Image 1 (cartoon, rainbow, N blue to C red):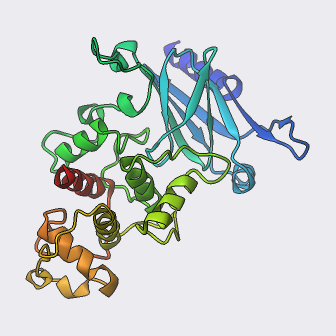
Image 2 (cartoon, one colour):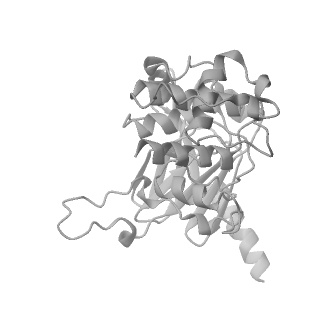
Length: 302
């Protein structure tokens, strides 16, 4: 009986609690029925926007708003990349812009989680302050080498979970790093009418952190180091003598010419430590590696 009730609940959620809305050519509201699966567990709802032809066609042209009935008084939403996105909560329903297929996680926020300290003068508006601590991720243990880094980026609201956990071994993208660095710099990166990363992309180009190309491309370790170096340099944090000898690494000569100066700096200041005596410069940077490098950079910045 319990399994039957759970199945019926899942069907009800999938077909009645979520609607998409997008503007038609006349500026009115048009509806379409996307393929969705919605699961709810305690204080979290995960909405999977399925990878179908219809969904792909809609998302390629527009970024519709998804409205989900949740019954939460306060909540935050993270996108399939684990980035917190802007959401509007009203009358027990939460609405947010969908930019791509995948899992969108809606997490209930308790009032105490963002209650300001007495005399602080701060409001208790829900924001990135409600990210879960690292120990709540099912795939992150205290014995993991990246535990401290995951804890740090979570508490500092630089990275969040993906709906499946933190997914420390998953790849990261160039757009994800633009967004994180733009937030660190105090830039508003909420999605408008363009792509979810549009504001961060513009910031990256303007500051010289990146040329803004290939936003969905997997970021490599040397690209990550290079963008951090450019950001640090733009902030006046790079010292002339902070240049390590890459030949101490077995693959030091494999570093791309454009990234050599940045990698020498990253090694010198301890942002990049290498892996078993290698830099692996063209290797894809995992979420755990990005978290570690961001933590080391943040501590360097003070």
